[in-house]
Length: 99
Image (tube, rainbow, N blue to C red; front, side, top):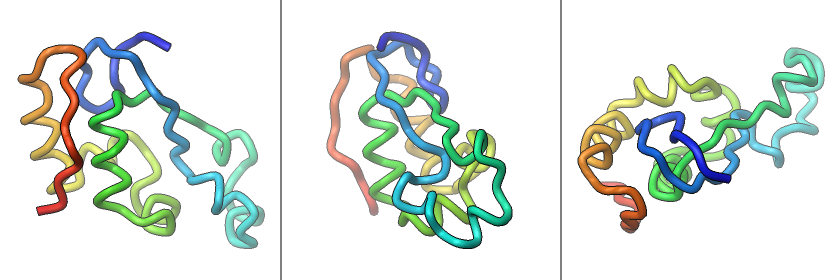
């Protein structure tokens, strides 16, 4: 799928990112507190941003603390990465950096 990355806003081929990771959908807390539509919500991320998100954050952290685009953009290390990757051309690939 082609489009604009939800984090860096570059025009790219996108991958689907579940705001609440699929492996956490059956968690008792999620079933009780999160509406089904929200639990299955996805956003489009370019491959470098998607790799960086998963390199920096665990599935549990993504589920509990970083489950919106706004929250992901506010993450200190991820926001530095976003500033850096925005300057790269479409199709640019890099390894995830965890500092």
